[in-house]
Length: 248
Image (cartoon, rainbow, N blue to C red; front, side, top):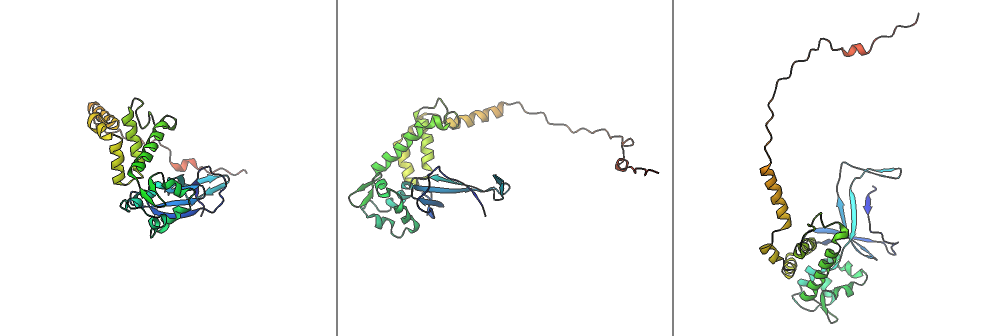
């Protein structure tokens, strides 16, 4: 059965991609694709009442499949945290982790681990490096807000730095477990935002609620009896199908 899948604009892959299932940092099982260009997360959006037209072909399956680049370090954080600050070899870390070991086939995977780990032929997660890496991602996302259309859509154009950090935090938190999310929240100083500044989204919701309260109530419609139509002049349906006289 044919399916529609949206992929990154990669050049021709040298190796056959491999589909694997791994535990997402939030605990549910997710589908990923190993390629020689990096890791992709595969997501499927179900739509039973639609189909696609591609060229002259109709694809009956209306599901939309999307494969987007995914940083494998998000998947490694929960595993590394189980090592309890011990230095471990990569083989020990991935031992008995099922298909997670497939991540070691990704290009520059060990070099990438050094971003969030202390490394001396062994690996140990570093909270300082981990938070610095996450802060870098926060800064990149904030820097790209204008060109991504986030300002004015999801974040007020007048929002301050903390509001922008809060939005970036919420995006990253979707890929972090609760412990790391809490550390990042604190490091970004978002507690200060919660305590001292009104939340932009809450203000929007509050304003809408006030508008609903102050809006004058609609007058209830009173049922009225419609006059009975005079059907005596209506044509019967038989009158539309008159017999045509045959020529003599």
